[in-house]
Amino acid sequence: MSPPATSPASQRTSRGRRPGAPDTRAEVLAAARASFAEKGFRGTTIRAVAASAGVDPALVHHYFGSKQRLFLAAMEFPIEPAVVIPSLVSGGPRDELGRRFVAFLVTLWDRPDVRPLVTGVVRSAATDAVAATMARRLLAEGPLLAISNALDVPDAALRAALASAQLMGLAMARYVIRIEPLASMSPEALAALAGPSIHRYLAGDLEPPKADGRG
Amino acid sequence: MSPPATSPASQRTSRGRRPGAPDTRAEVLAAARASFAEKGFRGTTIRAVAASAGVDPALVHHYFGSKQRLFLAAMEFPIEPAVVIPSLVSGGPRDELGRRFVAFLVTLWDRPDVRPLVTGVVRSAATDAVAATMARRLLAEGPLLAISNALDVPDAALRAALASAQLMGLAMARYVIRIEPLASMSPEALAALAGPSIHRYLAGDLEPPKADGRG
DNA sequence: GTCTATAGACGGATAGAC
DNA sequence: GTCTATCCGTCTATAGAC
Image (tube, rainbow over all chains, first blue to last red):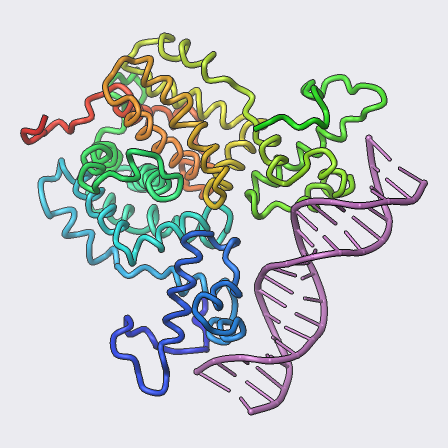
């Protein structure tokens, strides 16, 4: 969790490479992303990442210190929930919030630069503890909790957890297990199908229609 | 898929160990299950399994031939969907099928002898191809397709896929990522929350209530 | 049926030369 | 900033003794 002492602020989003320092670091990060995305944390080797980036394995250690830190650096998400959530909540009719949110999220996940992050985190979260924490924060304790809080409904944490489970299942089915037709479907079509479930979890009545006198 | 020629039928559920042949094989299988459940396929080593079972690593190879076959043997599910599905479909009011199914499945998954299989398959499916196929068959192409077929609704495959995604998300959230309060919730409570979503996927109207003139 | 021994290969991490 | 060399650990799988 403590920031590494290696390079303080070389986070220019790859725009304008500074003289004297070629983008070797960025190439290593790209190679790492691709490997983590396909093989997860355990399946990724520093040697393979280095080979794919055309550099020496020792250089990867020199830049990132350890495989763990390389993972954290490679899987950093490019969006901030706090910026997006408000416009999502108030960006249309409230009873279509679920559909809107799924469409936004799947469109984001489908982006060529984001998709490796999603599959990398999901794949690694299945077996690696820190990746699991990462996944939890990226969904249940992040944007979804923000949404359910913004909606002013009871049981915000429970709702965020339920929606997270549904969304994680969608990500798993679409990108990892590749269940058809979910894997090849357009974000909008998927949103139309799964949106109502997300909506019910986030803003709907959590008691089933035929409640038998409890609560 | 072809059964190994090592030992034909030593599957007595550990009751009555036959003379001359101790239940070493069963102990190895139990150790393998536990390890696959916690660390997935890649994280499990034959050496660790052997040590945990108190035998020699070579013996594991002798019994199962390879790590792959050990995995297949250890993750074999004890239930047959074809037997359970009909009683689930016709075992109560149809509009509560989703709740009934989730309650049944989560109760099954919670069983001490089944839970390792669930986590083992899910964890391994994230990074291993054969485990992913296994997961697909255990859900979307197995019981869920059977249900959606039995319900006589259109788009059976799509419905099975959607329900699978939701259920896989629940399994991931409850057993792997451990998102609270989902992880500690009773099967019935979870069924009351997620059942309606499953019901809509399997038997409900897949078009959102406010359809805008399509179909 | 169970073990020893070993082949054959790959892994993360480090020290230090250039 | 980049690489060579290497330590020390890991693993699956096999051959063969007992």
